[in-house]
Length: 80
Image (cartoon, rainbow, N blue to C red; front, side, top):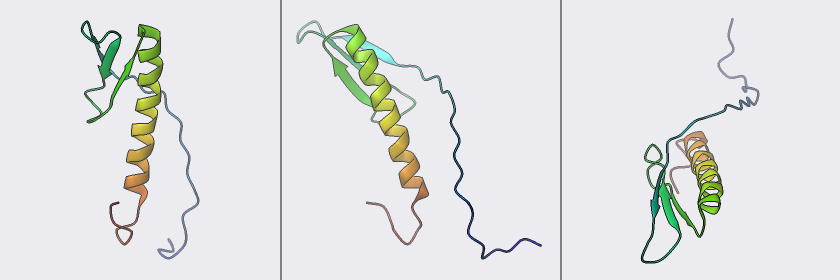
């Protein structure tokens, strides 16, 4: 029988995820801006293409971590 009151052990899962990014050349300001449409609000910028790509990886990781933390909160904690 399953004990509904028993605490669930922590569960960790690491996955490789492929996301499509849109990178824009900023001719007026210089450098690049970028977004990941599948992650609303996930935007970044960089002076070089390499920098904006690295920033995109960091922004996506932060977005996903924030979404995970938000989803993991109990209803009693509410949204911050």
